[in-house]
Image (cartoon, rainbow, N blue to C red; front, side, top):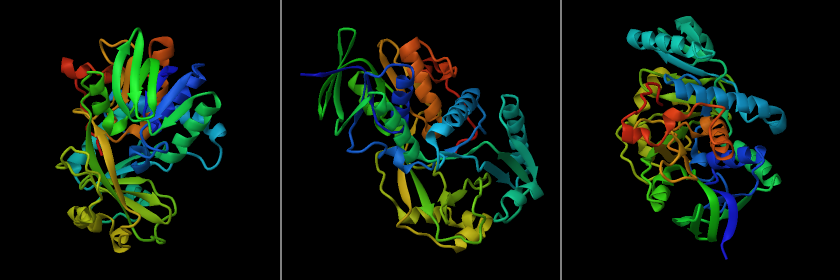
Length: 383
């Protein structure tokens, strides 16, 4: 006999558990999380870099970040120590005059929308990143930006949702989705489920899952690498997420080491998440030029990793109902912003299910049908 639930959420990563948490907070507790793995948050959530920033150049990305920051601040007492959200800041730096002018323009756009962001001269950048070398003309710093513990936040959402009555089925990869009256019938590896509403929050697999319901969700998986340095005792114990806008190399603290990332624009879409130790050679030169102390510390390949982004054609999430299928919702395609936007995404979807619309954030620009309408969104600050 099929298990019955009001809402089935496909995916128990940080986004899916956030939806479950927010549904429970709104009084909807007959919720079932369906996770194909044996533990929560072991897909893309476990591979995330964990940054959170409001330094974006589209209204909806800024709104999602600010709402997520507000939600995390509101949960701080419940979360306790260690905090899940650390405001170490994001620092963008450049030695290029045109890039600096673009940063200044972006900062004005962001401040007009309530973002705390400072424009720095060369001395200001070096004061916040004394480990940066080479030509520096200036940059921007967001003091409210910082880091989230992806696994910790996922576990908090899941724990609190479970206490309220939300249940999770593991090893429950979904193999079929069909309409059943006003709801849905789902076939999973752990048994059949009947649900009044379904949320697809399956990360890079969301396109495949949506296809089971005959819905086209243009989410593709793209591999990303994070390399971890050897110990760096000479660097400050807390540093901002520091992005060299001239090369695309970004660095942040990872314990007593440094996590290093660089996005390969030529990486083909696909489910290949295998770690390639030689990938580092593609940006070793820019790393050594801009962050020589970090480059000199070497790499710990055993601590380094790779994972999958869930990317849409315009690098913005798909958030909201699937047009023409009442009760089917999508929360995916965050394009590297899933952890930082998970708190707001969870609340937005929960509000849609319970109240009929998102009240916390206007997520209309993230509607699935924007691809059909040709209403794509252009974000220039993609990492």
